[in-house]
Structures are given as C-alpha cells and as structure tokens.
Length: 255
Image (tube, rainbow, N blue to C red; front, side, top):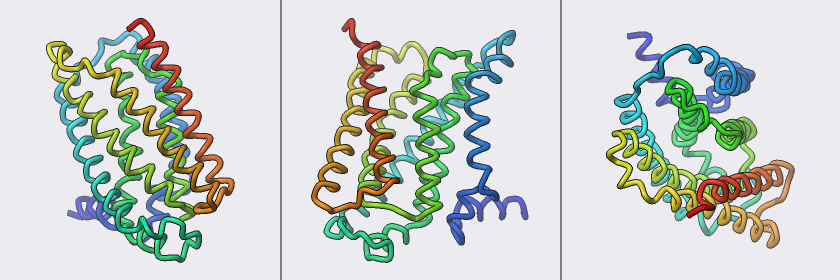
C-alpha cells in the first residue's frame, strides 16, 4: 500500500510543483531527455539491429486512446482558463489575477507536464517496432524542446497568456493527432479511413501560425512582455513551423 500511496501522491497531489517537476532532482529531467535522444538515435536501433520487431498492437491502441483522453482533459481545462481570464490576458505581474488564477490550477499544470514526458514514448515505440525512419530530427527535436519549455515554465513560474493559448491549441491538435494514431494502430485495413493525414499536418502548421500571430500582436501592443524566455519561445515555435512546412513539402509534394 505504501508504494500505491506514493504513486497516487506523485500523480494526483501537488504540494510543491517545482520540486515534483524535477522528479526528485533538478538534473533528472535533463538526464531523461539526454537518454531519450541517445536511445532513439543510437542505443535503441543498436539493440534492435538483430532482433525481430515487437508487435505492439494492443499496447499502441491503449496508449493512443489514453493520450486522446488525457489531451482532451487538458484542452477542456485550458479553454475554461482562457475564457475565464481573457479580460486579464495583459496582466504582467506574476502576482496578478491572471497568474494567480492559472498557477492556482497546479494539478492541471502538473498533469500537462507529465503528459509531455509520456509523449516521449512515441519514439520509443518506433524503435521497438523498427520504424527508425519515423524518428526524424523534427520528431526528436520537437519532443525534447517541448519538455524543456514546460520544465522551465514550472521551474521559474514565469509566464504570459500566450502560453495558455498555446496549451489550449496544442492539446486540441494532439487529440486529433492521437485519434489518427489510434485508428492506425488497428492495422492496415484502417488505411482507407486515414486519408486525412495531409490535413492533420496542415492543422499542425496552422496552430503554429496562430500562436506566432497572437504573440506578435501581444508584443507589439505591449500586452505581453518580450523578455528572453518569450523570444526563445517565439523562435522555437517559428522553427517548428519551418520544420513542419519542410516535412509537408517533402511528404505531400507529389499529391
């Protein structure tokens, strides 16, 4: 029971959000991300080189369904936050009503953070299924950078309303994305229902365009500050838009 209580406390209680985000030590999140890159690009493929690919159909069905539900939950909570605090979106002080309200939803913030680290399993499953070609620079960079961004956000508690907007849009897109993967996990016979992959990629690019537009307007009007973290985040989103556009061009250019 002690182990179960510890697991329950770790997932569903948030006495110290910053400490929990470190998984016990400030270097652990960085170690996880470094090992993730090494495993996906070198360790995993080497271990699987002379082994038969794993059949993970049932696990993938469960995993993708879980991701759909988890991201739906975060989307709903975040949209409610956006609507509730929309009139206070230009509050700058971290002690203001916006920050107090958003940071007051610590449990939801913690769950979002956990989900972003769980997302790393996407590439792990690719390795175990010997789908190494799907482990692209875009895939690895995207997941590592997102985990780092959310870790820094929780660690510093420095935020703007643009981040709440980003979470709402991104989690909604992830619901659609994992719906696609959920259907694909049932097997080749589902391919006839997955004609909309091209439009899923378009939706992913649109989210980045919306986020960049919102941030640009916010910075230009003084609604949000344009500090180092904000500029870094803006450039990160811009790089994702460029990478996804390049992927779209290479994948769908013949259609």
